[in-house]
Image 1 (spheres, rainbow, N blue to C red):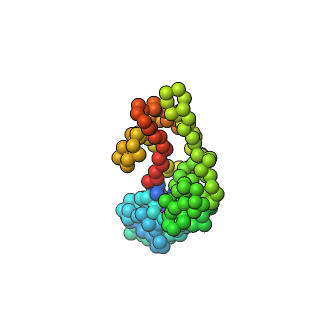
Image 2 (cartoon, helix red, strand yellow):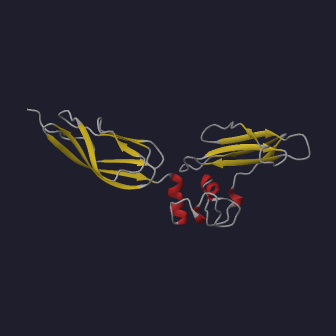
Image 3 (cartoon, rainbow, N blue to C red):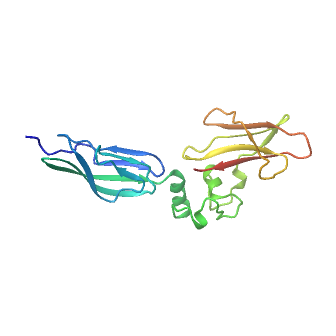
Length: 208
């Protein structure tokens, strides 16, 4: 006689908000269907035919589930804990600003210390959003005919894109990208000073 399934996969899995996560329910005796009770993290779903839990979790937290695998002889169960960690940016936000939520004074675009640096910039360069730190930003230097800036992103900063840009007018659509010529993890932007009365340089940062 065929026995009821026995689930042998791990009873815990950990992922990060906004990053793909998968977990395969492994069970003996050829289950014909899979299920769960409890609250699945938003963004994840269970394929009831294959037993694969997959997706991109949209919220951090701890999510306890009871998994099931069934065949004609019965059902086996396993208690599973899915832990979804905050993104590095939201973890930084929580530590420094008291909330992981991208809102109010903790929003990416907010400037709670009034130093003209948004929270996103403070995070990107490993700065303190509660203390004026504009003097700690990487600075452009003139080397011969070029303007050059070199920096290394903090090791705990993930999910940030850096762009070196140059303009002669400061108009929104008049910024030109400068190639990164650094050797990872170092970033280096270098560009000749444009002919004319003015030339502007900046580092722009974005998050997903």
